Length: 102
Length: 233
Image (cartoon, rainbow over all chains, first blue to last red; front, side, top):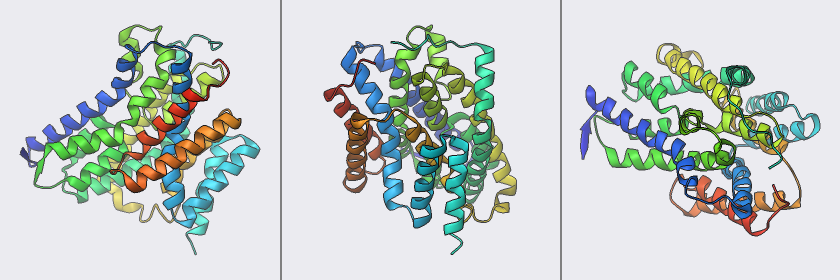
């Protein structure tokens, strides 16, 4: 099925995107209504929530340029030492910007 | 669970809104980039704004721009948007234990604007024994506002920021999420889970269809954590 993106067609596509995205935002708790929450499910959920972030970041860290790699490293170290997210993020951005000037 | 019951009050929402404001300012830059890219891809201004306001999921919006043409079919759009945003399913599921006591309307309302940043901060706060739903809802409102505002600015002044890459601005979100990871609980079991998630996401990134790596890594890490059980949560 093909849609002409001039005029109302664009809004149809955007509407479908919005519905699909909302389904992903609501689908998780909808499904969990049918899953009995026992200790093992709880452990799965906890482990999974950290893993989402790791799975997002790893390909970035491996495939990114030197600026991206050092930015992530700077953020991790600053966070471990100072435990202040905003400073850690700022450190990462500054490092990426500096490295990319050369 | 030892955590206090999670509440939703106007004060809690407002304080969450304020906590996410500093990061939201950076989100303007992403919105700007999206507005600029949208106008270059042939979207009219109203469509680009409508997309940012109703979809509110940056990566999937950029990906749809790649597909944008005079004649386009819906199925690839649906698959792309779903694959990129499927991580929301896991985010919702991870918050379920802290939302289960609320009414259906509040439960679904709280997740209306869930995205990477406000979800990560919210869960972080909950795991530390603090109130987290204000960060989810109020933070989501802050991020949404600045995403839409950024898109609007990008449509008109997008060319003003010539090279966000050389300023390191593309790293804001990744550094933020990494800071959230590092700030969490760390022990041998958690490191093992991270290794499993990292390796499986990399393998998926290299060998499985595009955009599957987040889901694969998260499910692998979660499964590993369900096999090697930690102390009672």
